[in-house]
Image (cartoon, rainbow, N blue to C red; front, side, top):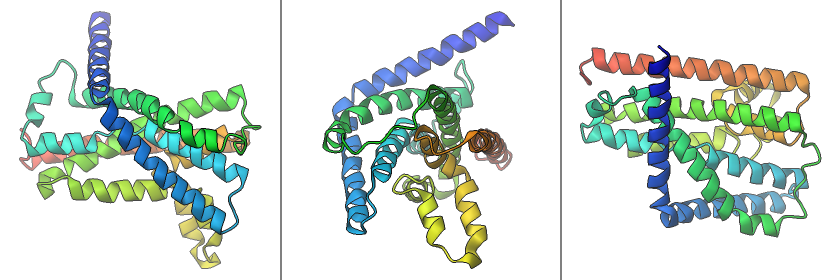
Length: 270
């Protein structure tokens, strides 16, 4: 049993290293893509400046949130969709690791590479706003919880993006599903702005939607972990965030596994 576990860990790291090295081979292209997101970040800052609400806290939130969003993006929805489109998915069921372990390793590699590339691409913005960044609430406890929530958020995104990739069985193309998902993720994760701002301007009659914005799964990818790293959450908020991201990760993975079983049952996959 221990030998099998040891082999699984070894295979996991082999896959992770393979995809990390693969990313390095396309470093310039990846760096250009990461840099393009900086223009979006700057555009958002211009909007906040125009409305007179570009505070140090907002600047810090946007920079930290943008870095977290890129660094925990497994980027497997498009890849999985094209694998399905090319009818190569059955090959992945024959690997030493199962399909889920494979794409978790793939997502981890992309995450590490994304952290490297996005950190470098954010240097100009960091230099531009270095005197505006406010991390006075940063503590060792916040950092540890932030890392834990970020890792769970990565696993959550792997499961979500695999589900998006599976839609290729039905749509024959993955581009449309990925485009819708990316826009929803940017909006509902709180990447472009703290979702609490949107909740605060909604009418009282939409209280249920305010609760939805804060509690829906995508909020645990950027919004909640960024609030933790900024020191805006007390201990009870931190515990609730941990419970929320853990529960959503489990539920989405159950949905993910069920989706693959359903696809097999419907004859889409042997």
